[in-house]
Figure 1: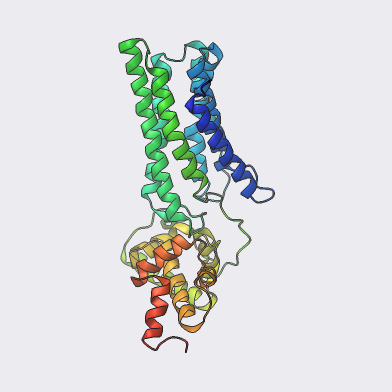
Figure 2: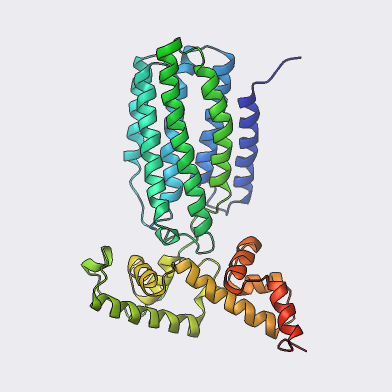
Length: 355
């Protein structure tokens, strides 16, 4: 009975994931960075499977080039959520071009290519982990409901890229010690384990930023140097409190937290502020990020609806601005210490609910 190399099985699973991403995408937004990344992972596994089962020179030359595309694509998936402006793509093509040139000069398992690949993976891993360390407010163009999960996925992908760098170094060591006898097996196992995990993390995180309609700006202010690098002197702290007061008034009067597509950028525009300035004020004065603050308001609204209506919990979840049940339950428990159903039951048991 003929056997199918395991990388081909992984490639088939990722191809199914690609099809699901296309089927679930909005019209006019079929080609997204997550879809391109998953497609590249699929191609990489196919190339690894061919390398496993054949020894064609073209496959040996193609494999490192395909691998070199993965770190830039992973970075672009998350970088699009930091700011809505367009970013230059050509700098991310340079590492791929360098590996392509080296691949055309040396055979696949030569140390120079492995060293270059390790540097590429480590560089992008460091960039992702550094961005993740800034917290959910770093993703100003992401839905506030998705930002914490996106940060967790970013950390996972960053660690996976760092792991790939170690794999490239292990290949270089294998070349030096045993003429690359185990290199194909090392690559196949590493790709089979890490690529599906990274692809799934990126595909299921909700990395597509919401459409950004023009939002009204209130009391626009001139941008100053402190907007880029906020300081914490007395004047700034007083201005921070003024921003918090304006934010509280906006939340109370217009309830923007009920918008499930609310982003830090959109909220900041409604206040006439740069996103970083709003984030800094919330962090300094309230010791939390904007995502947590907005979710506090959403939970308060959910508590009000649980007490005053007989609506199902799921409907209340959407009315309060949450998109997913898991995030709703997690944030509700963080704020109240119990579940939505438990909160409603306790209030009615105490005689405070609807008769």
